[in-house]
View 1 (tube, rainbow, N blue to C red):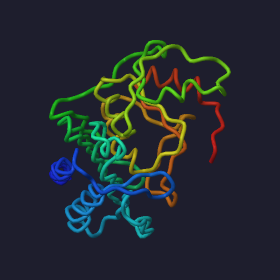
View 2: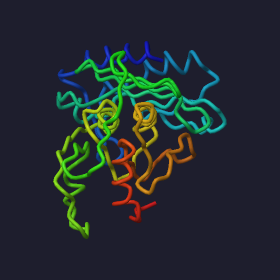
View 3: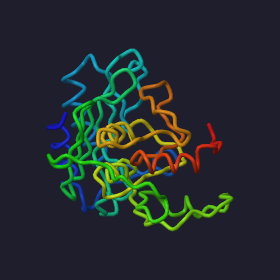
View 4: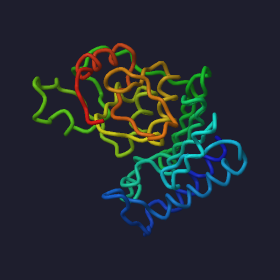
Amino acid sequence: MLAAVREAGILALGFYRTDLKKWIKGGDSIVTEADIAVNELLQKKLAVERPDYGWLSEETEDDHLRLTRSRVWVVDPIDGTRAFAKGKPHFVISVALVENGAPVLGALFNPATDEFFEASAGGGARLNGASIHVTDRASIAGCRMASHLTLFRHPAWKEPWPEMEMIERNSVAYRIALVACGAADAAMALSAKNDWDLAAADLIVREAGGRMTSHDGRPLVYNRELPRHRSLIAAGPRLHEALSARVGGLTLPS
């Protein structure tokens, strides 16, 4: 898996900051020829080599045969396609192996910045081979939040949020990886995300000592019939508790 992700990153880098072919899919989602090429490479390297595993990718039509498999590859060929298409280095190739609903292997590779995050269940998390760990921050005020400022400025909040240092990245998986390595203290989203956005990052941040759940504290379960999640909070245990106390009672669209 690690070798395949590295090869995929090299392939993606060949398209980066070039005159890409791109188009719109599913409303306002953008896809490029690089997404398709990387998806094909990963499918060849992973799915073909493990024919008894299931396959779930953003760029492959969903085959519900995956629901009958205990092990499933969960892939986002390029998470952060908008940033990639604009030549911004805020994207990752994301691959996880999910077993019985939980990620057991995960890798995120940003070839533009040469950041390779990886984790295995019970084996810790690493960035470019070195062990990483989340921060021990407890206070929301002044924390480095990997999210979008518009979330916290929404007029629906009854109480204003304290000032935070915002770290905005197009890729949600990359934002969570920044939490895992301590470059951010927390990441939060209150809008729906897909399995392929979260599975690898989920394992990496948890193996780095953090917690990642839905906004109401529920663990994320992968490879369900509808592979979507309403929300996420990723942070070190103490800050996760503080954020959960703030938003845990919210009712979000199902």
